[in-house]
Length: 476
Image (cartoon, rainbow, N blue to C red; front, side, top):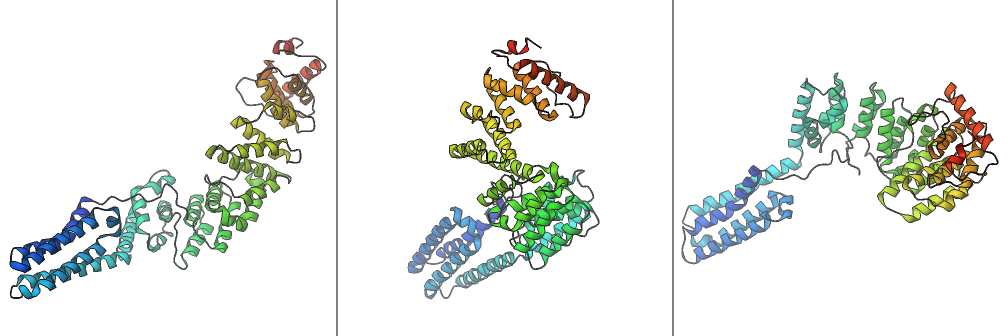
């Protein structure tokens, strides 16, 4: 079960009042027996004194250990009071004519019964349900809301509302049709990543996600259902991968993929369709909220990189995010070696090889031998250009310069501009590109002029042996 860090419940520290109340309840039997000591003598006095010491010992064990605070006052109170009652029963024949033992017996029966009743009422959820209804009414009547809707989920009232809904989500569900957008968003934020639902409640939230016109409401409803385990509901959520809003698509991606080990077979087809949709090209790679993809998901994405179109590009980008996350979490040399092997393998799809080259360049984990291997003309031009730039970064390299000349003569304006950028930065040759600025648009006059210059440079340098950047500029 997944709980985001922003809503993970903090460890509660008992208040001063709750501590004082606990001590008073648990110390009462010892105090009653201590008062009884002053009213008796002989053997009865000794028995009551022993009982008082025994009560104090149990009180210390139950009050000054972490486990005692976690269990609550109920079990400890019942043990202490019943023990004290049994002690009075043993002493009873010696003090049967006094009124005090009868009063103490009544208190030792009434107090634990009251504590047990309060504990039963608390565990029934009635108090939480009442608090949830009160908080729901306050949210419905609230007038001042943050200007940014995303800030609604951070309000103290919303956090308190989330805590009050741990038994029943009904108070929040009653707000889902409120006319004010902020109220509906706050109610869904209180249900975010809810682990358990009653019958029919999930379908109600899903209906809100399907019918809401506001992307923020649809995204919040999806986050509320992120912990559901039913396959049909997961597949229903996967339909939102084709939503018109990027905010909703991002929310459903995170909601589905935090548990990709179990859910991937259910949603892989929907994810594939989403990655292949040209309308969602700008969404980029899958970003499963910092979670690593499973081996099955990685295998599918590797297969998709061999297909055509935007699907291959976004699948390769998704693998790039996955590998970068894996490398940042742990320095795994075996993973780096595997990425280098994939990069050097000509059977690996070109888009994936470019992505892997970018990863290895980022982490600085590729050697000169691999770079020289990538200069081979059988490799894609973009990959050869990247390898040539990395080699020239270390100094003049004849094979890298020859590769630049060959790539510059290719009849492709996009590659020509990229080559001009490398030549200008690594060799110090001015080809008309502004320093520190992005490359000009492909169909601009500046791009045409830069392309002409880089092709002239390549033609002039053909057959020349260049040993320094000054030699490369001498004929320009």
